[in-house]
Length: 86
Image 1 (tube, rainbow, N blue to C red):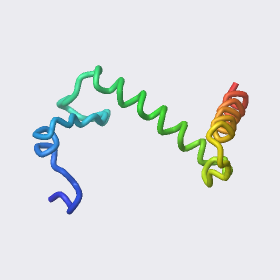
Image 2 (cartoon, rainbow, N blue to C red; image 1 turned 120 degrees about the vertical axis):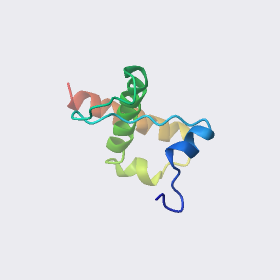
Image 3 (cartoon, rainbow, N blue to C red; image 1 turned 60 degrees about the horizontal axis):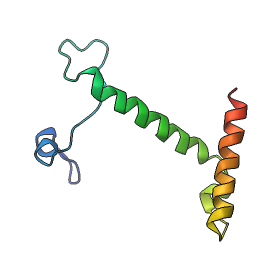
Image 4 (cartoon, rainbow, N blue to C red; image 1 turned 135 degrees about the horizontal axis):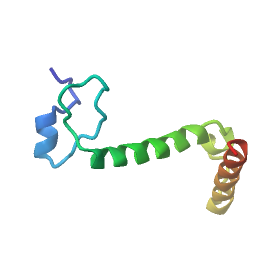
């Protein structure tokens, strides 16, 4: 039974929402094709980037008043992450 704020798969399809989740490796009947899973992988990369940006406290609390300064620190954090993983 779905909780108060949860939608069932039928309710989501009625609203035009397509559920994208990978099947388990031992699943006998595949319910999704590989095309939808490409979007899932791309979404996971973006969510992982936002998770890594949470490690920089200055970005989380947003101390900068001007958007240009904030954007500069976001770019600096991305550059530091890129250099760390090279």
